[in-house]
Length: 492
Ligand code: CLF
Ligand code: SF4
Image (cartoon, rainbow, N blue to C red; front, side):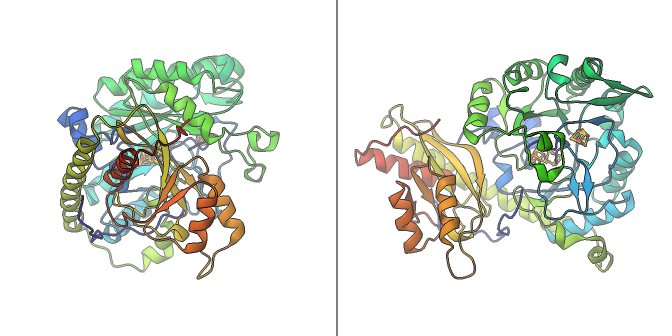
């Protein structure tokens, strides 16, 4: 059992949740809490502190996006780039455009305040490589100003083959390409036009050029040893049945990770899909597709479909603390020591966490049958159960089985606790969001919500407050087995 310790670097509570694609969004997936034993030391060194490329790292490390790339060279039916909409929490929406110089200063300001910061990404609000001068000038400035911070970029891939060498020269180890189709018949339903070779292309011709450029760019990057994550937006009735084929194609070309995200479609966003009633997938539909694509390739399930100017741990957005006027007033100096100290702390935590998980798994060996059960967890980071039920703005969902605890996704909710009192209607929505879970693990919960959850068949568990998530879940599952209380196979 791990010690009951509250992390000294306690991240703030998650609040909201771009990789260029605005549509979307134990041994789990990088999916897998991919650990050193799962990959070469070189690859592990590249992913261990990257919150998107390692599910394990996302509990500990923060990213920030700098909105220096306003233009785009294609149009996706799920995107409407607009500015100054701070209430939005989806990619492509930003509060402020930045010049490269302002962006570099912002990176230093955030790094000085948030020791968890490990990665700076350019993910819009347009396409990073449709704005190559701004993107590469910004990366140059950051590399000179803060050399310990990793660089990351996201692109639709159309211009990618022209810039692979520049990406390699800047030591950018992580590139995301949004690939939603291989078949131009599917593509013409997603992309009304592209702008390529000084000309606007439409229909299947546009989709054919785009898919050829994406595949070429992917092959060129992987040939240089650059890790590539592929984002795909799941659009029911358009490309949902096609994405398994996309998965195979990108896997065979060496992509490291596949992130299948749900379409975000709301008429208020003013996108083509939003205005024409195209629906997004249900969580169960998304999970079923992700499950079907698992095998031989890491699947990302912890994407929060960030804004193009997001700051903080995945799932939180501290961008409002770092607006241009606030940064102008800050006295900023580069100091990597707090980040080095934080990384050493995380290394120790990871070792303790892995030992606790292995110990609980060993204790369960031979007891579990084939049943699987879903559970929900409230956390504000550090891989620990350290959030009050009423303060949770999302639940992390794990699937428990004889193989251990596997992270399979997250569900966003409104805070149940409204400043000292609970809102009954919100509790109903929260309960509905986790209705397929057998238990919810919290650091604290009141009597009323506990009773209501029990009435819905969900056990509220606070016995593991502030302990590691995975070992706690396995211990709970094992005790259920020992008490000979078979759990219902509720996992989809
Ligand atoms: Fe940003 Fe994307 Fe780099 Fe991460 S986000 S550019 S790889 S540093 Fe991450 Fe955000 Fe999902 Fe993107 S959670 S939208 S996958
Ligand atoms: Fe929007 Fe361009 Fe990104 Fe498509 S590629 S989501 S149009 S910014």
